[in-house]
Structures are given as structure tokens and as C-alpha cells.
Image 1 (cartoon, rainbow, N blue to C red):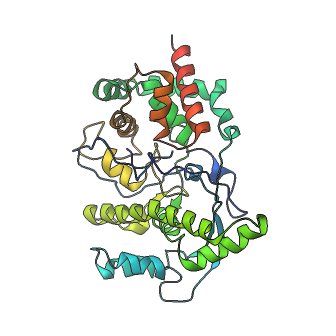
Image 2 (image 1 turned 60 degrees about the vertical axis):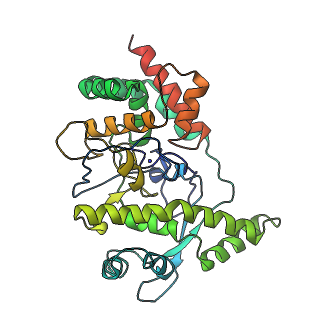
Image 3 (image 1 turned 60 degrees about the horizontal axis):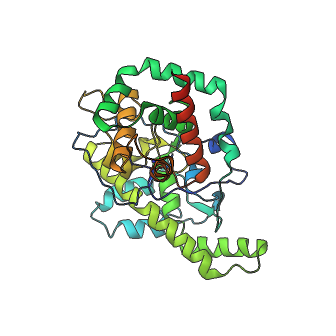
Length: 335
């Protein structure tokens, strides 16, 4: 996922040869589609250089790269461009993005019907060396954690656990073009892409039906099309070039890996400098606190209730279990 990236959208991403193991390392998932219970009134400003790494495994799907699919003016983005032109966006603005040489051509996006995330993805985060770094981070940004706890009543250990798992405490925030990654996911339901996936999945399981594949593709489109709109709104309102914003494979950014809509709803100006940057530790810490507060987190909740709240950040039981385990270890070792 600021709930920019974590409430109902998480999926698991296992990629084809075009994606590296490093790109699959954990990062958040914030659900951009869930109804949000809290919004921030802070001024939001992304700044000019975003470099987030949002783990696509939160997307709960397998995504693969295929060959470019079109030689049209929009180089394969015709399906998405046609939809965007029905929105209240300047046509010239849309054209400038999807005809730019900086925007990669659309290529086939492959996916699985029932993605599953293994807990093996998260085993490293409970290691002593990782916990030591997390404790150092807690100490270094003690004031920011204290402020977030007072404002949102969310445990510093939970927030630090999220940051550790999402981006290794900000060390691995991603390098992918956000508009490209989100546009690919928003284009996943176009007929040619569905047909390609149906043919591929049929070779793996003869029981697979076209309707099942189309339903899955439409669901993914419905999840990510709003994120493309959110990104355009963000860029337009703040005078940013959509082609300059960098993030993860699934289009999330910053230390907490928020999607654009999550950023807009939960981004918080933790250091009170008039801007919200998810690459700033104080802002990232407060934004995560704001997210969990919005979903009803209280430190007094039962373990089962806490797990339900964390689920909103990433729809993966393996992720939820690890976040809670790491938070508990951090708290235990701080005594």
C-alpha cells in the first residue's frame, strides 16, 4: 500500500523470467479499493523523485511479461487510453504519456487464477540481524515513533515491523515506472490479454474456463484502474510529470509502499514541514500509523483482532503472521 496500498487488493506475484528474485522481495500491500474510515487533511506533496518498491506479491497474482502487442500510436495502450478519455482528464495529457518514448509499449500480462504466497518469502525478517537493524531504526527515529503513537495510538513495533518487511526500513523502495506498472495491471482485462491467458492456463489445467479467466482479469482491472486515475490526479494537482514517478512492480512507492489512492487517503505530514513524502521516515511512520488507525487498530485488541486489521495492509496470511511475529519480537527484545 498511507492506505495508499493496503486494504483490499493484495495478491501474490510469482513472475516469469523477466522478473528477478530481488523484485519479488517483500514490500506492502495496501488495499486501494476498500472503503476507508479515515482521511487526512494534511497537504499532500510527492516531491519530484519517487523511488518505491511495492511488492507485487501483495497483489496476489503471477505477472509475466510478454511481447509488445501493437504498433498503434499508443503502442498497445489503446484499451486503457480509450477508457481514460471517458474520464475528466485532458486528452492531450493522456496522449503525452501513452505516446511518449519513456512509456514502454504494452506487452502481455500473464496471471494465475488462484495465487498463493509462501511464508518462506518472509523467514528472513525474524532473524537476529534484521531485528537488530529494526531496533536501531526505532532508536534513531524515536521521536517520530513516539509522535505517531500519541497521535494514532498504534504501536511503534507494529509500524517498524511493516517498514522492515516492506522495504527493509527504506533501503529497497523500488525503481520501476509507476505509470507503466499500474497501467499494465489496469489493462489486464483487455480481450487479447484474456485470450492469451486462457490459452496458457488451459495448457496447465483443462478444467479452466474462459469465464473464469475473464472474471479474474476483470477483477484485477477493477482494482488497478482507479490507481491509474489516482496517479493522474496526484500528478496533475501537484504539477508533476507522471513519467517521473518511480515505484514498485505493482505501482506502490515509498518506505511503506503505498499505492496512489492509499497515499491520498492516509499520507500524513509527520515532520510538519508542509509536505508529505513517503521517503521521509517521519512522514512514512505517521502515514502507517494513520492507516492502521483508520482500520481500527488498538494495542488492546486481541491477537486475532490484530491479525484482521493487518490483513487490510496485505491480503496474505503469511504476511500477516510475519508482521505480528516481528512486532512481538521487537517489543519483547526492547524490554
